[in-house]
Image 1 (tube, rainbow, N blue to C red):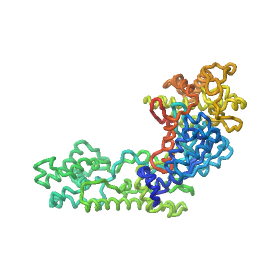
Image 2 (cartoon, one colour):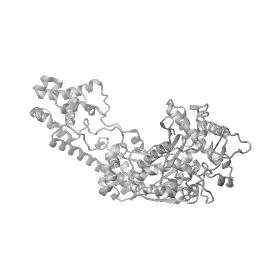
Image 3 (tube, one colour):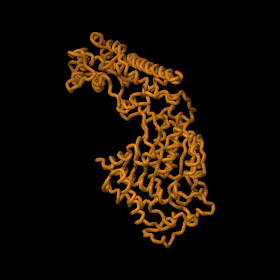
Image 4 (cartoon, rainbow, N blue to C red):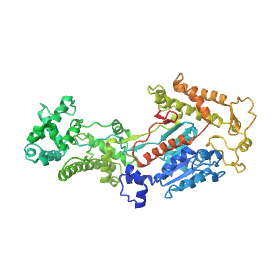
Length: 618
């Protein structure tokens, strides 16, 4: 568990990263600066992802790619130049990438990706994240197993025509600083502890009436609501129970009590009515919802699920992260009747119309309660460390405070393996089938796009090329590959060929006038004849097989005709406009994982640039 650090940044670095520091703070930046990223394949999708990470200030990057820079690269990759033609693509990209941020260390490996994955799996052990771009499913499955063995995160990115996918895989991601878009302050207006009650009593009854108009106009609105709730509760025959169902009449009653406090204390206010209510009273009315929040709080479903995680009952493993010990401490805290079985107080309060003295006093009460609750959680967590033969020093008071501050949104994400997804295990097939039957047209459409994406992957596996690309360059004839130069994703590699010193990549290939025997010719492209009708029929057959495997029948979202035809027409294209979006999303996922902030995408995401929509499908 890593809490906020006392990391002191040089002034120049602080200015360089000023905007992102406002998002993830110095502790998040410190984590990012320790991040080592490996990129597989230096096409536009992967390069766009690594570019964003280099600009963000990661520690280092390593590029793995054995392809040469060809004329085609110049059309969709901004990190290779004309002067790089014929040179190693990984080396060229690394050189230009370093120019973006000279504080980031860069290196490259001029080897085939498949060879590195299968022959040297320990190569990936020292990385924080591996970004795999345009890799085959079989390669990803092997790589995923390697990354999980070394607790390395994997982010897989693909771009094919106007469609892209983003897929994260890891054993588990512990999310603490979730930073949800909508949050509310934890003021416990209807659950005040003794110190807060004692403070609020200074602003009620005779004491409130004896104040001057100016003093009354500066009573913090949280205090006003505490007293209003107490009066409402006292008026009931029985105290408001934790399961009290608040009616509209109850809520109106709270607001009437708030107004009455001020009108009874001031003849002028009583005479002029609502128009004469001071600003702090208006603030209390606007925030009256705090009075009818559920008495024992409502824990988010993700936190409840995490508190029930079997891992909390198995903390004996020596390398168990202290996050789990703190979570176990929180669970004990919530089960303690003396603590009211409610979450630790978060400790911060919003701005309020108030005197500095009263506001600081109120702020101190909340902070002291927050520290006391965090200490109780921390003590329980340290006791569990002792019981499991670990050192108490692994959890400091600061760690406990930081954990409790964000504990309400703590949860854990676990991804199914890539192999499970490819083989429709562990609920993958059922999840995709559900998306294909979804009432939301966007989800259904993106799910259909995913089916075609899988079909294209299988087509590449069996034929060594993308559908719609030249047939004669994928027949396994090395002489023809040399003659015609650049090919689409041959074998299990990227869209560029393996290194061949005898080839002149500066000259574009010549078209072939005679198609292969038995091939129905639709068009000639990139130095070869394309069997578009044959590829379309083959791809459609693969799509039908995939749909059958997940028990989906018919033609959902035109997956068998329109989308299949479009996939063949794309011919393995990786347009930069789409690659930039997928690379950007991929970089965001890396940052979420590394900084341990925000919530990473827990499912496979599909982006359709033609419709400008995204959806997670399984």
